[in-house]
Image (cartoon, rainbow, N blue to C red; front, top):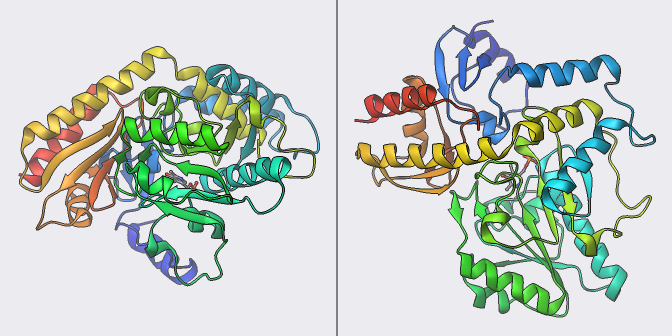
Length: 392
Ligand SMILES: *Cc1c(COP(=O)(O)O)cnc(C)c1O
């Protein structure tokens, strides 16, 4: 089908909740995709951080087809090998105690919020269910994760929202302390606010929050849906901040293109969920788990240090171009934010790049790059050249 044909069907029959770019992607290989008309694009988006191994990775295809031939789904009524192996790999890599599997980032965060509230309920009883989150955060699109998201623009239309969230200023420990009370059970945050604009938290702020949480028996809940699974050059971003959270959520890149996520809990939270307290039909499904096992096997020390080096390379090259519309870069590994200068909007810059053959994301008021972790030097250079030509 042509772009116009696909668009016509979308507009006629799909709820118009997305402001899509004027592009229909047909297929991909590595960090390159082709559209419905056969035009080629370098991809600095990975389907919003999901396609961590790029497109049509041979090993990933083999892992999921082999599992599809054996068992595509069975539900959590029965044990199955793929999720058990995946749980072992995740706990071994992170030194966490155990894991609950979900199907998306928002659902992982729902699990994390439920876990924190039940941890507190089991220990202290009712009335201690409030979670402090940060302004400018993003935690998902369910009613509860929208409530957890500290941006006013997300608190519209869908009233009543879940109660029990208070919003502190990022990088301002006093503002977290000011929200303290007997009703608080946890602080939940992204270490680099992704959708908010690729804004890394300060080390001193994170240290302060972790200390405050320990003093008050609040859980430290880290949303690594975007930063996790190698995106920042370590398995999880918290490693680079030098602490281990009580609970961490992950999703996007874990299964390299299949809907999969979860929450990892530390020893002290191991027993919070008991039979019947939390569940999902699809969670931990065999094909997604087989894909995730393959992703973790690929994510060795060599690939992780490559991610760091590639991130540095892209940032240095972009800043050295001195383009009129782009300013400073920030981020960690292959999670990169680029300032868009006054006089330009991030959407128009992204569209201009797309028209010239490069896919980029927006975040907050800036541009955001989340290339596949396996992107090659040649693909990066091609993307950079497009950026130079299109924006000079
Ligand atoms: C993308 C994202 C989510 C939501 O994940 P979905 O899979 O879209 O539900 C939650 N938190 C963060 C930090 C994210 O980047």
